[in-house]
Length: 65
Image (cartoon, rainbow, N blue to C red; front, top):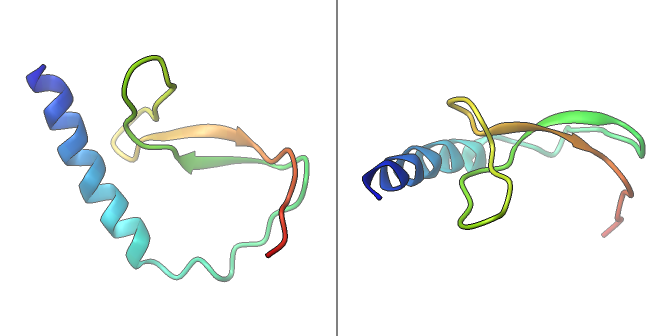
């Protein structure tokens, strides 16, 4: 149980640093594969690995706002 608390604490630090970055210049397209910080999840969900909680992600469909 304490291991998960440490993982969440580390993930929150990474998450805060990612929020502070300017991500308006990221350009991607459908079919690309990117390394993304997925984070620390609970239960059966897949969570990121390494110190930045990253996993490869396939861009399936780009949604426009």
